[in-house]
Length: 256
Length: 338
Ligand SMILES: Nc1ncnc2c1ncn2[C@@H]1O[C@H](COP(=O)(O)OP(=O)(O)OP(=O)(O)O)[C@@H](O)[C@H]1O
Ligand SMILES: [Mg+2]
Image 1 (cartoon, chains in turn blue, green):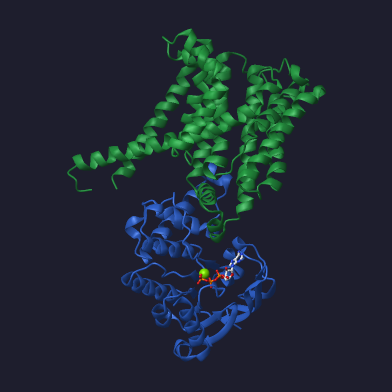
Image 2 (cartoon, protein in one colour):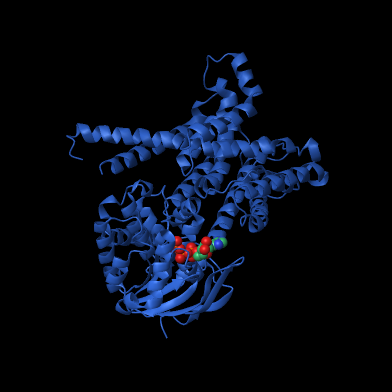
């Protein structure tokens, strides 16, 4: 069994079945991609895996524990973390502080300990700041640590959101369209960052429209269309899959 | 980069100067009227420290904090009149306010924005009704008279100077503790909740628990402030614990600037002293002071609206851009290599 095991998850919004009995497994140490046309249910699937939406049916288990219906912060504590399609940062905080918030589950200082500035708390704060700087260097944001997050350009915001997610030291990271709005150079840097993160021991599931990036980095691809899984396999097979081509051609025909 | 140590030194220097002034005041100020107003500033600061955490940092509005002020004041005043020692009455007053805060927070912090405002407003009105109607305990609209001054055994704070020192000692400790909280993990979590609850949850923050905690803390500080008030003035009546007071408190935080404790302190000092401007500005005519006092509520309302419209960063926002300008100028005069 995989690190993440998704079995028959379903989510309905009124008459619309956004995710329809989807099952897949994610194996440790891989980069897994979820692709599909707009409205296929990819983001909804992420919401179901991370506790932001409750499934109408199906189960999700992560490293042997059933996490279906758990509240989001508890899932993060277990080591499963996510980013958002539309990058949600804490704009009024600094870049460094954003990563420190990402480290919330790995630090412990509460109101009382912090108010009294206990030695344990001071040490923890110092170590956390060091670690946060290290994570920022990992995504090449080291030199803007003290900038206001809201002042960063788009490409760097996406990287910061990844650094913040890494702050929890996750076992599995779900990224929702990390390359959206990035130029070619930034996308190349992102691919490099993803591999670096994977090599540091974090398993990755990425939802992405940029097929170049998907084919480049992923070991395994799940294809969704209208809420249903229509294909699954390694990049080379997915590219040739008739059902996948059909789904994407259908989309282009509609777009035209 | 040079800007960071520069502002830090400046901050410490300002804090040291402020501390010295606070300590020296009762020995220098001979005007009892002014000392009384300064004591009220200290009482309000304790309340606003809590409200700053709740509203300024976590972004959770409360329009009912006067109720916690009242809970602290009546509980402690009532018990002290029965002969309970002040420290015990104080603990009971703070506990009553904290409990009230918990009971209100548990159901209402799942609410957002306007609903939370409505729930806290309703709570404030209910408590006001309770303060007015339960005459046996509160003395009804006639109020509770003859509350003994604060004291511990033979030490009794019964002169204007000792009362002032007691209030400000507590205020300084509370502000120091709050300042320690806001720049560490819990402070960051509160600001994260203000920024985006969804993203805060995605960072592993238990947002509901955090909001309940900070609400209870702010209620407890409101209670503490109310206890000190009751034993300072010796007489309390419902007219003190109104929606107007709750709104003034919110205005103090907003004027100071969201997410800034120092700003909230400045806002509190300014708005508390405003109606008594004659005590610090000697030449002020009687008519001007009367005007300020007559229009007090309208001025507060206007300040709130003006701040929201024209200076969303509050006084702290001004302070920050001022410091930024200084450090830019410094960097330039240092040869522009920064
Ligand atoms: N909260 C919601 N309420 C109602 N409908 C929703 C909700 N969230 C998503 N949907 C619908 O569910 C379907 C799947 O949406 P989802 O956002 O998961 O698609 P997606 O695959 O992420 O698309 P995209 O590539 O555009 O991001 C869409 O038809 C969408 O309109
Ligand atoms: Mg999506």
